[in-house]
Image 1: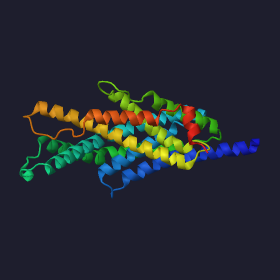
Image 2 (image 1 turned 120 degrees about the horizontal axis):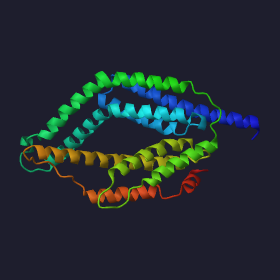
Image 3 (image 1 turned 180 degrees about the horizontal axis):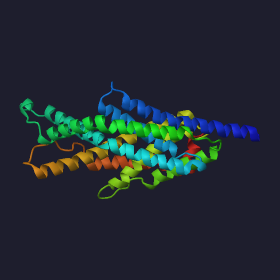
Image 4 (image 1 turned 90 degrees about the vertical axis):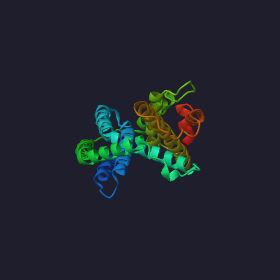
Length: 291
């Protein structure tokens, strides 16, 4: 490759990466402004956009390392600001689904089952947090996202090389490998959160791995997406279990549905899937996905 061709290639890589970052910000803003969507849908989609932007910002060329790190920190604050609305909705939906399933298997007048106080409390919290998010959090988040988008739009560079991308994607994979959940008496939930976060970064970064086989990438991303969902459900169910225990300690005991599938079986499957998805070394993983 001639020096001129090399420079053009580096510039093209930067433009592609830069457009992906700014598009993530634009999608988040558009989503928050879309009144046709339910509040919980806007929260969910915005968090997805923010996570994609976070993952891609970690691929920034060296001269933008500090700037991208600053934007990631600001993105984290935006995600945290809409987190309560997300958590309340997930807890309410999970408990409602559990109760619905529980009632279907009852043989005596399920329609007379009293709605547990916890579900009523979660419904109220859900409504309050979503109303507050729409009135107070969304407008501030939009302003902050526009500021981030403007900052990123001013970035100029032609030094995003394939070597930089490979190095950063390799580092992201190593991070996920570091946090792979392991069998113990109880899963470390902090470590599990860290693993899922690293997995999400790896999922989005795979699109920038040079010389890839698209079919292999699609297959790996499908598997990672499934694992990401299963891990999220496990963590959400654990949070609901904690809320339930706290609630029952504060009120007259109620009959709430059990956890269903054995936690030990769920944990064993998650650990197995996680280890299988990240058992290769970083170099072997990359080699396995290339043409």
